[in-house]
Amino acid sequence: MRILVIGDIHGGYKALIQVLDRAKVTAEDTLIFLGDYVDGWSESAETIQKLIELSETNSCVFIRGNHDLWCGLWLDKGATNPVWLAHGGKETIDSYIQSGLLTNDSHRQFFNELQNYYIDTENRLFVHAGFTSMHGVGKEEYESNYFWDRTLWEAALLADKVEEKNLADMLTSPKRFNHYQEIYIGHTPTTDYKKYTPIKAYNLWNVDTGAAFTGKLTILDVNTKELWQSDPLPSLYPDEKGRN
Picture (tube, rainbow, N blue to C red):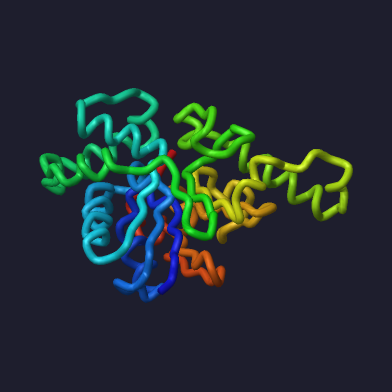
């Protein structure tokens, strides 16, 4: 049995199907999705439908991302906001209308049951964005940090540089990281750093490889670190622009 973690999809249904095939995913695999399933490419509703179907055949963990929070509020209460609409929300609404899945109650249930974070039996943490508490997740934390925080990622990059220069004994130990064997996040595209594969910094893995933009969708085996990727999303949706 493999434990596979999947980065931000952003409505890229074609990429999801492609990378599941390339990883030869079977019902024996545990799948951990890091959030941001919607907003970007034109097939957000189809993406959610596929995830629901996967949950019926596989052991799945679905983490909530900031875009999923917005979409869930819209499906549940009809609530929108200009920021969401300008960052993929309009495309998601269009996808739901055109697919005929707008009234599907299983989609509302999917968004309502998303988890803020997950810790597995090996003490590995999976969260969309990050957390700020020095005591770890679930303690003295604003819920919004799980969807929005980037200080954890920034601190991991710094801690990694410090470790490389053998300065760790001179600085305070990065306490946030020491609560967990490993941490897996999405939210900040590795393409921002001109990387198209997951980035490891300290004991943190960033698996958002820019599927919302010019990058690819990635599946990573958390035990072996073997990875599989889709084609770049613009090549799968040549008539679209993705997220702005």
